[in-house]
Image (tube, rainbow, N blue to C red; front, side):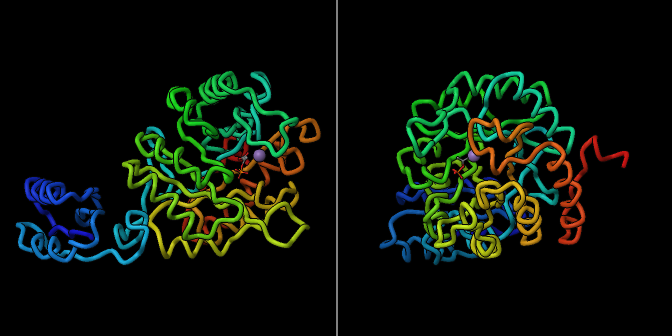
Length: 349
Ligand code: PEP
Ligand code: MN
């Protein structure tokens, strides 16, 4: 249920509502919106009607309404306005500005990671990506540098002046992720790793939750609900393509998901056209399409010598292509009422 507080309701009134819900065995989540505060509560469905009636009589309460969607906290019923997630200082995901996340598929060494970090930052990226624990199909493929890779990524981010994101595979590595990265990525293969999601729900660090390759949008929102219901409100969704019968591309980037998600959830959405297509030459058009469809940002793989990359070379953009992407993305962003700052490279053009 959602308890909608009156405009300007006092903190004391909100506190009393929260306490009453806790006493009834509900788990309240207070959401401070621009207009007013709402308290979303999840718990025993059977006594919901009685509790709702009681709460209507509380001071400062305007209305109490049931949440009809099965994923309660992720739904727009719980929070109609879009969520803006603070990453660092004045960097947010989900605001008017489009967020660009870029970097290599895998961290391959310090020198190259620092070089990529500086290049993508200069071109206009806000966040550096780099895998340290790689979920490879074959056990014989490069598995990533592990904790050492996280440390390298953190150093590269520091040198370039960008926050960093990396994928977690195992909850036992969580302390290292808390120390070294700004956003924790849950990959497609772990979208329904509920044990991992429950651990990540207990922290506050932003989580980028990729869509499972065979997951429906509702299953994906339920996975987000695991994070939200455990107390982590900083959830970002990432569409990275789904498996279909089509073999011309690695996956089928499901752009339908973007307006559908806009309709169902307040959470920000990022599009990953690198994994969504699997081919570097399809990345730019699909990144533009993603932003045109309403995504809050993109995540793309960049490598100076894709033919030598230790993973995902075929879908990685060279620096020049990445700069081209940013330039081409700017008018698209503006056409849909968003902004995109060009990097240092482009400012003088
Ligand atoms: C990645 O980002 O490199 C990755 C492995 O992504 P996904 O989980 O979408 O396959
Ligand atoms: Mn990759």
